[in-house]
Image 1: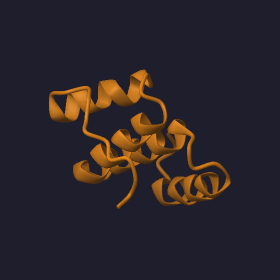
Image 2 (image 1 turned 90 degrees about the vertical axis):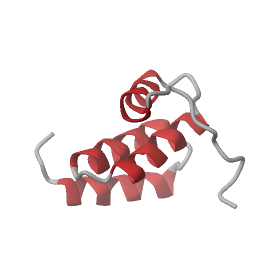
Image 3 (image 1 turned 135 degrees about the horizontal axis):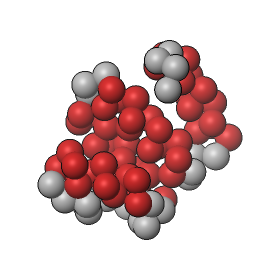
Length: 79
């Protein structure tokens, strides 16, 4: 909210190391990517949030806005 996106990403990286399954981490990362105009990374991060919390409304709404669909094929693992 304060516009320091680099610092915010650094803090989110720390949070991810502590608990990578928190959808809020991925959602907030996606918001930052969107603000930076990196929509592909934002879409991937919103999808990652949904992989941990399929009912996470804010991420689903953001995906709908960016892709036209609130659902995504989410791989079972990074491979």
